[in-house]
Length: 332
Ligand code: AQP
Image 1 (tube, rainbow, N blue to C red):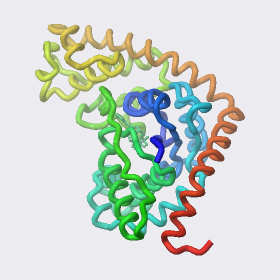
Image 2 (image 1 turned 90 degrees about the vertical axis):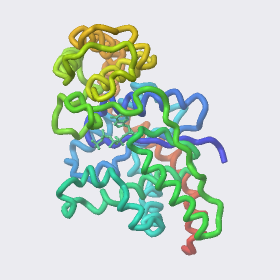
Image 3 (image 1 turned 45 degrees about the vertical axis):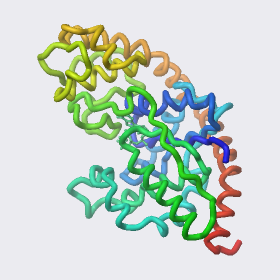
């Protein structure tokens, strides 16, 4: 099997700095050495309520963010999930492979369903089966994942193994995670113990990829910190979640280690550090924001890319899906 990468992000809001540092930026690098399939996973997004008009706008905006970050539609396949029906077909088969016990262990469902578990959609519960289908529909060998998605990838591997075993085939690869560099987990600017999330109710918890420079500056200025100074080594930040997060974001944006950042700012307070972080964030994000705004306006261009990407994705998926159906015993 060829080395093939699959990854995606949900158009469930505006893409954030977390999505950029934990996913998009790595996707761009992977294009050099892998055959890459990048998807805007709109079917995942509707596991929680999405206003239809906003979903369509956010899907285009996510595609614009991928392209503005450097995903090249000539090199990689870029499409929105719902245009390739194989995702839903394979997900159903996987609903019948995955065990209830496996899904009951998924912490993301518990986090997202919260206290109102009985009122969560059944889609949210079987979300990891759809994610397994996304990956295995293309026999993807590698998936770049943030720390938070590691458990879902484990489930994908379990599903692949069980399917291969139950039907006596060698159809699905045991997909490997690719966790790359600093920025694997960017935390909320308001609470350093919570992931930066596009659906967090607080705008000030995150930096959106389409925030302008003033908004970025304001959000960093208001970011929660503590009164202590920056130590010379990153280990000494233990127990200071918000401080750790801001140092981590600086390290990820400048592509150096946290220790290097601590050495540079040793003895300084967060007032000074936040000014430097703002300058860096604006310098890195402004070109992406500008390009995103330009692309986003051109609906015909984006829709054309997504449609042609979907055709290419479907051409890879169909023969694999045919093998799957044959293995299961479906007549065609
Ligand atoms: N804070 C983060 N730090 C690092 N990586 C992150 N990713 C998301 N947030 C962070 C990575 O981005 C990719 C796409 O994620 P997603 O949009 O499909 O889903 P998510 O992880 O649930 O993202 P959000 O922003 O938290 O969405 P909502 O609020 O709708 O649930 C993944 O590779 C993810 O690891």
